[in-house]
View (cartoon, rainbow, N blue to C red):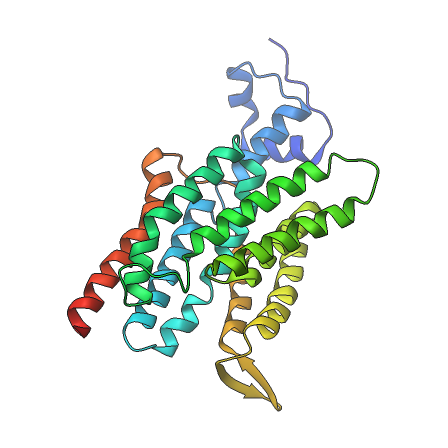
Length: 287
């Protein structure tokens, strides 16, 4: 049994610091660059925030936001809720990059959009079913379809590819506006911006810098009111609090977290379930 080969790469040296040499020799492992880098990636994904944990945090923010909306428009809770949507959009773009079947991903959003519509109307529109505004799952569904079409457009090596992308996202925004989905065209546009920045392939911290600038401009352009305070004569809208979501996104470790069908569908079920509970409470309190 010989001593394992070690390539002089940062990944290999780092792995030798993590795993004692005698333990490696006992296990008769041949260490090469690919093996080391794979183990490094696994080790790094145990630190930071997983997609599951980030999703859980966003769900809590969303619950507080909707509770604030139902019980008298409580500004503090609504401000906390501004953190939720950018995190969900970030995870949607990440999920799109890693999904094995984008059609099933879109189908899940579509089904839970249908399931969530009545709870959404009960909680936020004080009606059993009305069409002045649809739930955010429809916004996510339209965003997924647009990302899928945009990815297909990338396969065209010649021709006006940029124009094709522009038409796809413009059409998606118009569809969201026509359907009156939650966040409407602004929401789909944010999905498109997150997706585009994700395609650059730069590091997460660099992307977060772009996210923060983009979120501030986005919030000021589409949601100028209500204003929560002013700084040097500049009015800061409530939606600008969404910029702080980048702090939590920056902690993302690239890992999905514990894999379980229970967790997977619980994340989807939480949306209609919490809206239904809030809607029933609203009916009981305000009837």
